[in-house]
Length: 218
Image 1 (cartoon, rainbow, N blue to C red):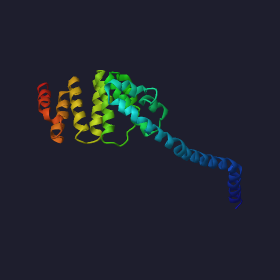
Image 2: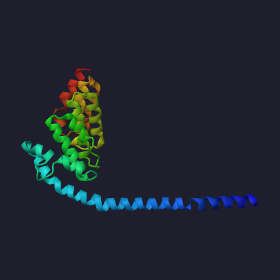
Image 3: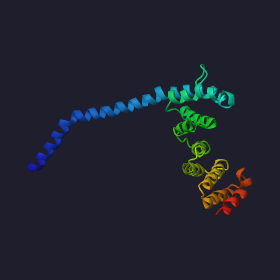
Image 4: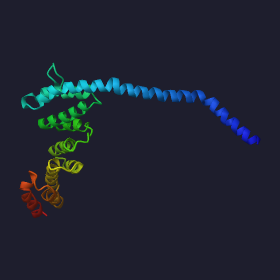
């Protein structure tokens, strides 16, 4: 009986001794929750809206070859994608800006910068954009002659979403780099998948010739 009393006393003593600490911990958690809610509503939401407003001019410039430098760096009056990505991080617009930057640097032949920004992109759930960005990273590695890395990324892009646009596009690129790696059987399989699964795609129109080439080299 005395043991139970001692245990009860010890439990009571523990909670009494630590009550102040527990109160501080609970209070701290509540403060963190309130800060997070405030951060979302008072900081992120306005930043997202401002970033979206800033995007339109950079997007216009991106469509014109001679103005693509302004799309990246801005024109003094409007922000470029680089500043949008840096200043409005944690927004959807900044995420898309990273994809634009990667694509523009890829077109310029600046493959390391392309990889840098494309890898900052976070998947949005888009069946088109997400595979495209992954595939563009593959393009940057392919242009840099790192065909093994390119093959891994093309395979990932092709399998990320099944559609008649990005899947056959990256299956064909996968087959081409597999040929560069002397992996002709794998290249044949990639090409054959286009013929079987995406017969209406643009890539399927000339795929028989690529299948025949891969078979001839085995």
